[in-house]
Amino acid sequence: MSLLKWALIFLVISIIAGLLGFTGVSIVSADIARTLFYVFLVIFLVLLVLGLTVFRV
Image (cartoon, rainbow, N blue to C red):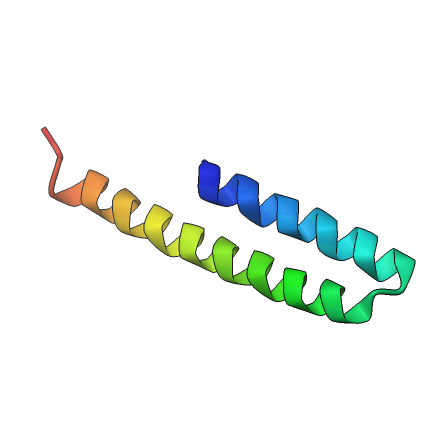
């Protein structure tokens, strides 16, 4: 959950920076948030598949 929390933090930073007119900071923090979310999604899917197949009791 820590990875998802950081993605949400960077998303909020991006939105606030965009509202204040700091477009460079907004773009960079949005890219970081998107990357962290995709990493979280991949890890979640891998663990979901492993949980449903390999570690089935």
